[in-house]
Amino acid sequence: KRSNAALIERFQSPIVYRDSNDFKKEFKNLVDEHYNPVSVFYHYHSLVSNFWNDMQEADEVKLKSLMYVVRSILCCIWALKDADTLPMEINPLMKYASEDVKQRIRELIALKAVKNESYLHPMDEHLKDWIIQTKKELEKKKEEVRIRSADIENLNNLFLKIWHENNNNR
Figure: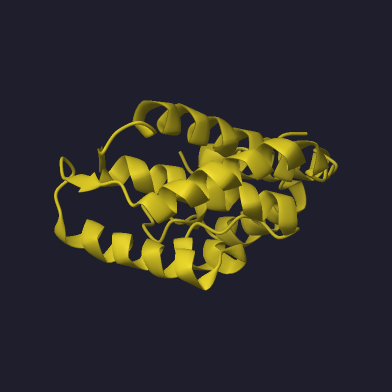
């Protein structure tokens, strides 16, 4: 019934701590089948609200926090407009952003690569306007997010299979 946005992100991470047989391929199919844009939308919508409330009046903001807001907004837009599972990387998420916003985000990404986590960045007024306007649009459209449902049995079967494999190897 629900998607776990954090689990989807971790699953798509390029960092692999352990790989078990065909688990990644099987789980990818289940993630795609059980992906629920409604749950994902509301997860990121709440992140936008939480982070934005802390920074909206600031002249300077932590770059990392600003990127959380930007990425979370892009995730909300994706959940509204795209039926595919949310990508982890930011470049595909920018699919629905204007060229100007994409360029500003790319500049922030490049800056983030060379700055430490405590770096305070002057608030970009154009990006701030985009955030405010997009937040308003998301608020109006949040009821339009499409619900998808899937049979939970195949998910249970995969986890039982993995559990049995791990317990038989002990």
